[in-house]
Length: 479
Length: 82
Image 1 (tube, chains in turn orange, purple):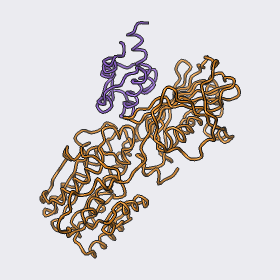
Image 2 (cartoon, each protein chain N blue to C red):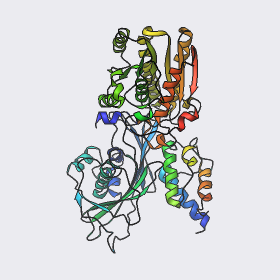
Image 3 (cartoon, helix red, strand yellow):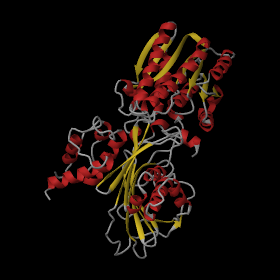
Image 4 (cartoon, one colour):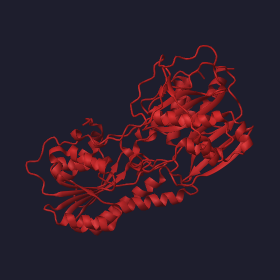
């Protein structure tokens, strides 16, 4: 429930824990059927935002209950509760275990090692509190078997606190009940598989009660911790003989491409007004990364959707020593995942509205103070030419942004309206299983953009550029 | 049970786990015909098939849109017995 942590996630906001959503979905099943369940499978497809409403439907087939939860026009999660029990014994030698250690009070943040065949199980002194039954009661799942209820909480603990931990994403849980084995450790888990391309992990685990053991197989994805720009990858090959006589505004400058572009310009001796809404820590980090050029970086906290805040920024700029040469409009809401069905249409419209606001509001205030031959950079996406199936809202929003760029070129013919169709980049927004595959590092793109603008090769009017291949293949050096 | 039948059964089990239970999946099915088949589901499918059949599929399986049939072909191509 940490809002600042959530803002740096691909969702951009706090989301409901998967196992909590599961408990609520189980409340759709009649109590006597719920109590008869001995195996539970749940699969998560999309996040449910805190405070949002999900619609659930339930069906029964051959004694098994299936519940689906929908939100923003798409399937969020589905579960199957069935009566089959795992009759196999846990007899024979117990697997090797480590001495139990206390359960974690804060989530693990370490990178995972590849599992080896002889990796031991980890034993944890994990205890279920009475609050869990109270929560189940509240959500309509009071009659769920103890082993399954406790197993859900255990799976949530393992995924959220142990493996993958803080930066993980839970996507599936399979729970089965089995007779408890004598002498078995109470709560154990072991990493079974890791995929270094996607970050997928599979964890096998067991929670043993007095009479019943719960086997839990957990599927989750690791994500890398949000990181600041690699400043050393943004340095110019050589500085111009004379400092550029100009200032640049970057809107959306606390992370992602905006942060890297702001730093790239500061390192090239522009005065940079880096506009950000909330991420104060990230903005402060940029000052550190700018090093000797920190004095050229003005961190300006303001809501880009707020006209009065943008007007105040314009006043600040017009009082500055250097003319405003460029405005980089890099702010955008996190895409999420929306289907154009059901209540998804409203989500699409809302997303487009916010995206346009983040471009149009700063533009309205800053255009009067932009140099007559200035440049406005509109951050669009190659998604317009190859629309991702999951992102109708994102494609519509980028189309609207490009439309504004076209208007600007006609209404202000002396200016340069530069539309950059960006590839998928490794940013907080794309730090998700599907997002990171094939994503390019941000820094080479930011460096290319800054140098393209400095070179002055893009003339007045509307220009549309895609990032050239050579800019995508330069190595990023970690700062 | 013939190897073809075993292959199909294991393949179908993975599809069910990721995409939904009690459904019939034809070779032509993919993101256009199956609601649950989004980019995340495709990644989960590829990873789950790799685990189930002990194969490693090419990165194109993750990046490019697939169908049930194309994934079956990729899995079989990498030595999983059909």
